Length: 247
Ligand SMILES: [Zn+2]
Image 1 (tube, protein in one colour):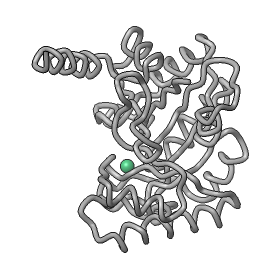
Image 2 (cartoon, helix red, strand yellow):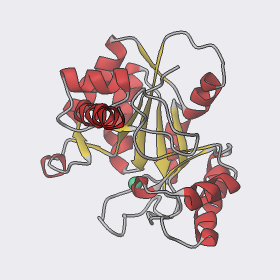
Image 3 (cartoon, helix red, strand yellow):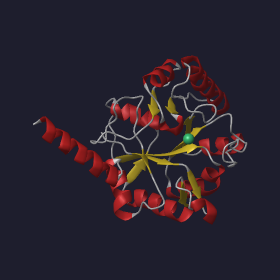
Image 4 (cartoon, protein in one colour):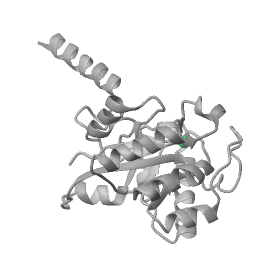
């Protein structure tokens, strides 16, 4: 079964923030969430998705709503909208940053109290590493350390098993993938899905990023196909060209 996974970062009503490509305004986010509710989507978590992929029956149209990094605005702005519409979400956290300001951007990050409150509702938490450092090209021991320490810290704080990882900056290769797997994760998010909406493997779960400009047809396409419309056309074009060349 094809399960689209949406990717958000910031959701904010601050005008200065909305011009940031990694921010969706509160107004647009509400419209997008209402779209999901109106079109009969059921938001699920990654463990449920893994069970569906291995054959468990699921009635309805599943979608996964994810947020990377864990900004405070996920709690103050996105969470009330999700709760009002009865939608579940997953947030990939950086334990080193929780309750602090991100060193690179100065953004306020979720604290453990906010995380605990959200986890009592339909918000699932998974790992994005300890700190927001790229794992690509790093020593395997360091990759393993980022993976295992964040898994343990989140698992202790949330009293639950942490099964999924999202690669910082979406960057990974075979070395990164094998260390994530060695640390005991059952899957990891990175890159975009295949053209048919499936994923190359469990350690390259594709997501589609959602932007402020996504409304009507574009948002509908992303939700239905798990794919950006422009990217879809480009990839489709590439595939047609390759077929011509090989014939
Ligand atoms: Zn990130």
